[in-house]
Length: 96
Image (cartoon, rainbow, N blue to C red; front, side):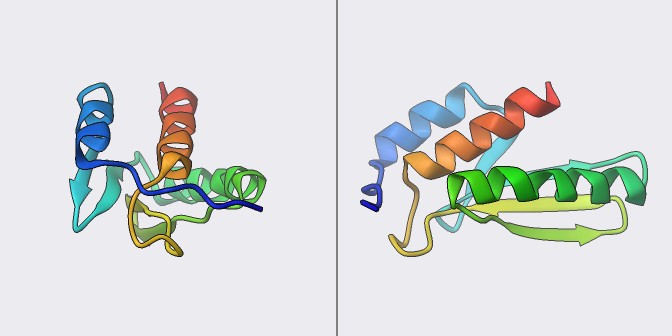
C-alpha cells in the first residue's frame, strides 16, 4: 500500500482553523478531553479500535481516570499526513 506524503505546515494550520478541539504539539495532532466518568472515557477508547483498524492508522492514547489525550501522527512518515486529518475528522463527527 502506498503511504501518504507529509502535509505542509500551511495545510495543517488551515485544517486546525476548522477543528478547534484539536491542537498541534510537537508535530502531532492532539485532542485533550475530560469525560464524565472513567467508564465513559474507556468506552471512547474502545470505540477507537474499529476506526484505527479500518484506517490502518493507530493513535497514541493516554487515559488517566476520566482525562484522555489522543495523539495522531503518521509514525512511518515522521509527521502529519491525510491519514491523521481523516482520523481526527471522524472523531469530530462521532463526538459532535
